[in-house]
Length: 467
Picture 1 (cartoon, one colour):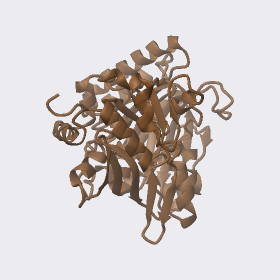
Picture 2: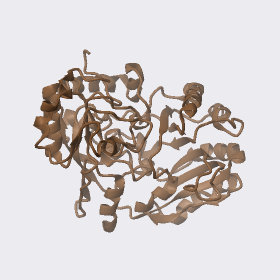
Picture 3: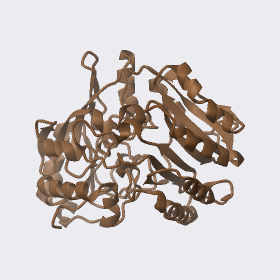
Picture 4: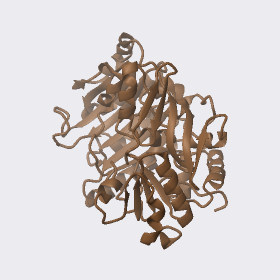
């Protein structure tokens, strides 16, 4: 995607960025490649200018320059959600903005734009407090939360965006605003679930939870036992208290040293769980899962909340990935049959690294205290597929398998996705699937108010109303 005004290619136009404290780099400059590269290597960014912001002032100055030169803008902290290459324009990197300040008495954390959940947990764990982070603590806290944020303990406590008290956000013309339920309430609505469509968040204040430890881990069975484990898990999810959070996954793991034995190079069915209640009660609840099929590896244990990366064991090193999702109403026997035909043991050539179903419901189904743009509260499950694009020839089989999976499962779906896990955004109709029609129209109106020139148009963004 090219900028509407090409004048930003000229070096004199960068003079306005000279007051920025962080680096301002162009293609060919030392450090440019490192600055633009994110975790997901499938999206290779080639912006005309990248600004390594060190604080809110740098972001404001960069946006004022972009607004004056009609330069489109993208933002990246970690690049976990980099499903769309940034071509030309301005990239604002917030990776240097990692400050986290904790008020343990009020159970609040002020989180800067580039902080990873790992930074947040390092600051909150000494106080016995926890933030609602997802399956990888390497992900950026702000970008994750702007998309709603589906936490490991979501069924127990809701979406990460539900616990946001306020945002500091720079809107595209370069105005720094404070947004909460009483100040700029429409902006506050759009930032919680609307992703990066209306501004660049410089920091947010989130509530913390008194969760120092949890029962968590994975129960792994050989892939040949997928069907009994899946059918037992699906029935089990209908009986659970809200606090039990779980995911059923099929893992086709490569034979690489980063994966421990005996999992390395195998095909596995796994139920991963997180339970913040009394450990003995969680263990009792797990009995049907452990009895469903022969268990090869059982990593379920009481662990510090800050160690929750052990539960899903997601990759810690950058890689080129293709991810996508769909929201499901229910897992009927027919839906399970369809899922197995696409990704189970009888689909041995399935090229997808991970295909999983997350159990939703519980607190994830309840309305937020302050209304927001999250539109997945009516779904009971989320289907997600991840493929690793190790080499160009691998891309097309992964795309074909992904399309086939979602087409086959569409009769059991809501027709919508979650914006954070949606994957590479397509045309407007495809992008709109992350919201209900009503929420999508409202977001377009807000886009018209806060970004009428559509400067924020990279990634999973939408057009202003009337465009």
